Length: 441
Length: 178
Image (tube, rainbow over all chains, first blue to last red; front, side):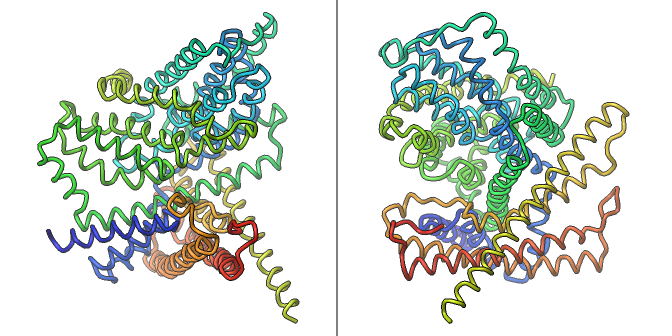
C-alpha cells in the first residue's frame, strides 16, 4: 500500500467519524478534503487552489439548473397545482375501490413532473389528499403509506435534482439522464397503482370506493390540469426533443409556474418571499455539499482510494452483476442513514470507478446512465424506510391520528414494489436505455 | 448592567439575522432575474432568432453570486444537513457541543475562504480577466461573494454562541435551540 493510499483511507475514517458526530455533511467533506489535500500536496498548492476553487464550482453552467428546478418546485407547492391535479385524478379514479389512494399516486406523479423533490411532493400532496382519504374512511396506514411512497415519484419523474447532481459527478449528459428516467418513472407509477389494487383486494375495507363524479364536473376537473400538462410538455418535452438545454428549460418552467400561480391568485408577494427563502436554504445546502464533494474528490483522487477500490473489485473474480447488486444494497443501507443528495455525492465518486471497470456487455456511457437510474431509485428508498424515512416523518406529522408505526407498515408494500422494480431494471437495462437511444435517433 | 449588555447583544444579533435574511433574499431576486433573462433569451431566439447577448455567462455569474449569498442564511437557519441518527440518543448538552463544533468549522471555512478569495479577486484585478462576450471583469462577482463569506462568519459566530449557551444551560424541553 502506498503512503498516499494510507492517508486517503485515514481520511475516509475521519469523514465517517465526523458525519457520525453530527457535523454537517458538507463541512465534514470540506474539512477532510481540505486537510487531506494539504497533507498530501503541501499547503501552498491547496491555498492557491482555494482562490478560485469555490467560484469555479459554483459557476458551472450545468449546475445552474439546480436552483431553478428547486425554485420551480417551491413555487409549484404554493401555486395550487396540487389541488387541481388531485381533483382531476380523483374524477378519473376515485370511483374504484382504493381509487382515492390511486388518485393520490397519480397526482403525485403529475406533481413530480414539475417538482424535483421527494419531500416537497409528499408534503404538498399530503396536505391536499390526506383529508380526502380520511373523509372516505381509508385505513390510516394505507392513506399515509400511499402518500409517503407517492412522494418518491417527485424524484423519479424528471425534473430531478438528484439526477442532475449524479450527471455532473460522473460527467454524464443531463438530457440523456432525464430521458432514461422517464420509463422507469412510469413503471413506478404503474407498480404503485397495482400495489394499491392488490392491497384493497386483500383488505377491501381499507379503501372503500369514492363517489362517481358528475359528467360536467369530470370535464371541468380534467381541463384544469391543462396548464400542468403544458408546463411539463414544454419543459421536459422541450429538453427531450432538443429544443433547449436544461437551464433555459428550467427558467421557462419557473416563469410559467409563477405566472400560473399569480393568475390563479395563489401566489402573492409573501408567498414568493417564502419560496425564495426556501430556495435559498436548499440551494445553499446543495452547493456547499457540492463544494465539499469536489474537495473530497481532489483528495481521494490524489490518495488513489477510488482506483484502489475499483482494482480490488475488478480482480476479485466476482460476477459484475453481483458486485452491482452489492453496491446497490450498500446504497440502500447508507440511504437509510443519510439524505439522498449527500448519499449520492458521497458514494458515487467511490462507486462509479468500480462500476466503470466492470463488463456488463454495453458501452461505458450506457452503463453510466443505467447505474445512475438504479442508484437514484435505491437511495430514494431510504426516504421510506426506518430509521430516518423523511417522507414518512413528514406525512405522519400531518396525519396526527395515525401512529408512525402504521405509516411504516403502510409503506412496506410500496417498498416491496420498488424492490421488484429495481430487480426489473437490473435485469432489463433496455428499460432505462431504450428511450435515450430512440430519441437520439 | 449585565442586563443592559444582554439586550444590546440581543439587538445586534437580531439585526445581523435580519441582514443575513435580506442578503439571501437579494440573492433570490438575483436568481429570479437570471430566470427572467433566460426566459426572455429563449423567447427572443425563438421569435427573432437572436438570444439575449451573453446569457450564458450572465447565468454563470448570477447563479454563483446568488448561491454564495445563500450560505450565511443556511448557517443561521441550520439548513446544512447532518446525519442525526448516530447521536439521536445523546443528551442535549452533547448535541449542543457538537453543534458548536460544526459552527466552529463553519467559521474556519468562511474565514479561510474569505482570505483566499480576496487574494483571488486581487489576482483577477491584476491580470484582468473578463467574460467572453460582455467583457465583464470577473472580479466584479467576487465583491458580493466576499460579503457573503463575511456574513457566513457572522452567522456561524451567532450559531456558535447559541450552542455554547445551550451547553452551559441546556433548554428545559431537552432539544437544542436551533
